[in-house]
Structures are given as C-alpha cells and as structure tokens.
Length: 500
Image (cartoon, rainbow, N blue to C red; front, side, top):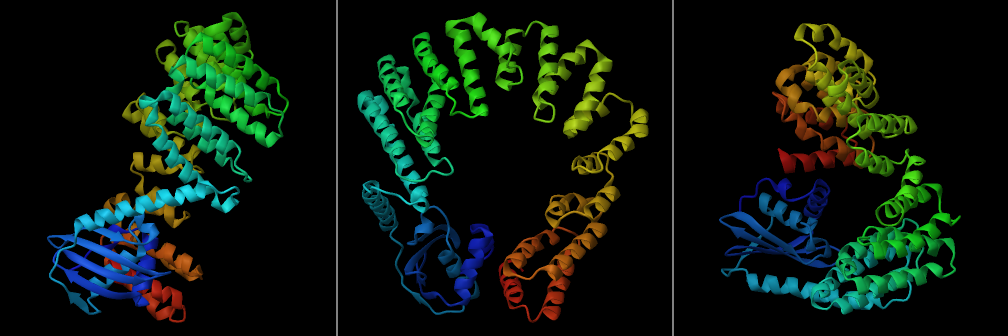
C-alpha cells in the first residue's frame, strides 16, 4: 500500500506518539486482507488496529484502545508509518474485513459502557480527579432521560427531580463549580417540562423547600444556581409572582456577592415590569443604568424617543468607562449618523481610538476624499503604533514594508498569521525574517517541547517562494550544529519522515 499524507488523519501530538511507537517497533504484526489491514500494537496492553480500504484509500480506521472511541489514535499512526516505509513483514490473507463484526464490536463497547456506568453510579464517594468521568456519565443519562418528556411527562419529572437531588448531594469538593455545569445541562434538556403548569407548580414548591433549608454557603450556592436557571423559564404571571418571592429573598441574603446581587436585581425588575408593578420596576431601573440588561430594557421602552436614548446611552458609556461599552457606543453613533454629521465623526474617531476596530477605521475613511485621506492616514497609523490594530491598518493601506518592520519584534506565532499575504507582496523579506526567527528560536531552545513547537512552524516556510530550499538549509544547519541535542535530532527525523 502506498501511504501518503499521514498528517491529515491525526493531530500533531498523536502523530509524534505514533512515530515514537513505530521507531520503538511496537507494531508486532500486520496482516493484509482483501480490503485492508489488521495489525497488533503493543501499548499498556495489546491493541488491535483495523484499517479498511476503498480503492487504496483509507475509508475507515478502528482501534481497540479507549482513545479511539472518538478519535484516531497513536496505534493507528504507528501502523501507517510501518505501511509507508514497508519495513516489516506483512502476512497476506485473502479474506475481507467483516464490517458487521466491526459494527458489533462498537455495539459491545457501548453496552460495556452502560454496565460500567451502572457500577460507577452506585459509588458513595468521588475524588476530585474522578469528577470529570462522573459528569460525562450523568450528562449521558440526562440525554437518555429527555425522551420521556413526550412519552411520559410524570416519569420525566421524576427523572429530573432525581438528578437534582443526586447531583446536589454529590459528596465531592466542587472547587470549579462543576455541579453548576450539570445543573445547566439538566435545566436545558428538561425545559419542556415547565410548559406544563401543574408540573411547574410542583417544581416551584420543590425549589422553595430547598431554599428554606438552612445550610452552609457551599450548599447555598447551588440553590442560588437553581433559582438563577429557573428564571429563564418564566412565561406566565402565575409563575412570576411566586418566583419573585424567592428572588426577592435571595436578593436580600447577605451571603451573595455584589455582582450576583446585581444579576438578581435585573430579574426582579423584569418580573415587576411585565407581571407585577410597572412603576416600581421603572424606578428600580433608573437606579441601575450601569447594568447592560437594564439599559437595553429601557432603550426598548424608549425606542421612539431619540433624546431619551441619547441620555441613556451617554450615561451607560460614562458608568462603564474603562469596561466594555462597545455596543452602546455603536448605538449612539447610529443615532448621530442622521442627526448630527460632525458629532457622528467625532464619536467615530473617539470610538476607534478607544476600541481600535478596523471596521470603524474604514467607516471613517469612507467619509473623506482620496486626497484628504492621503494627508491624514499616517496620523492614524502613528496613534495606534503600540497596538495590534497597527497591523490591520498596514494591510488596509498596503504598507507592507511597515508591516515587515513591525513583525521583526513580534513572536513567530504572530508572523504565522501573515505568511500568505507577505509571501505574495514581500516574498524575499518575509523569507529572510522567518528564517532568522526560526534559527533564533532553535538557538535559545533546550527541551523537546520547545523543539516540537518550532518544528510545527516549519511547514509555513513551504508556502513562501524558495522556502523549501531555505528549510532544507535550516535542517542542515541543525544537523551540523546541534549533533549533541538528541531530542532535537529525533524531532528532525520525525519531521522529515512525516512531511518531506
């Protein structure tokens, strides 16, 4: 079999591991069949690799290792390296791979997982390093349980309630809020339940019971999360009034941080406005204009009053000075576009210098004649010389020499983004810059991880005219000057074997 382009089937790190297995002769046997190959590869145990062919092209690969359940693995890569180099005996067997047998094996793996999940689910305690597995298991069960919503809504609710209690009672230190992730998935998967009024009332009562339980701050955070998610599904007044009672209690609780209090304030305003007391809600909103949701809420109310909108937007931008106020700047600019041309251009200029957005730069540019713009565009470039928008402007104005000079002080990862562009417009300059950067990186690197990172950039040189010749020179330079760096020489072997 003629094997080409091994790299397109695997991530780079898996390729490296597969190449290492190949070099260490972990592939013990390859049998050629009518439509593919079967191989045995030694790892933590012996794994069976199956490669199915279609007119000499790979159409499917399977491996018995756990990683291969969702990805192509290092054992497959090791076998492909053996086939590419044809450096081990291959037995021939004139039979076809039994596709049905492969499918049955996949079914067996799924059945095995189900049995494993049952055993795992019955454990009484989980360590932190086991929590990810537990989350995967629970989420799969949740996904299975949603099918009962349409068939049996009462049973679906029992499943939903069971998972709330099960996850909340999980005896594990939850440093990064993993429980909240499960809760979010649970609510999203079962949200159709809340369209049923009787189920919703039952659920609300259940939530209220949880809320009244006296508990420590850790448990309280989960009750807070439940109420936060519950708010998303408010649709009718009979739901809102009861939920508002819980939200108001939560808003007054001194165990909630200020930021979280603000979020609940938003919910209280919305519920009051739509279902309970509009005047009270608007009074709350006027005192909370620095909150984006509240500002949006009021902007929608005053959508036919430009002066009121300007007042709200200017107050919002001022309240969030130094923070993200981009969307409000844009709204204010749109209002002034047809209202006051001079003010519009002033805001555009201010917005560009604050947010450094290339689209805004183009919008400003469009309001000047070509001669006018030629006189001022260098000024804009000078104003942003210490920011990344400098690169975008160089490209916009075709200042390729300025771009090359700027990239001389940048990391090689930044230069990678502009290889194709500069290969077209400044091929000689970018090739020389890239070569210097690579050699400098090699000179100051001292471990395999750094070598791998550098070699991952080698392919970029192939996109530059005459880049292959210079790349070969760099490899020759490495071979001659770093003979004592074993790891670097091994990585060069891997690169030449895989890509050249």
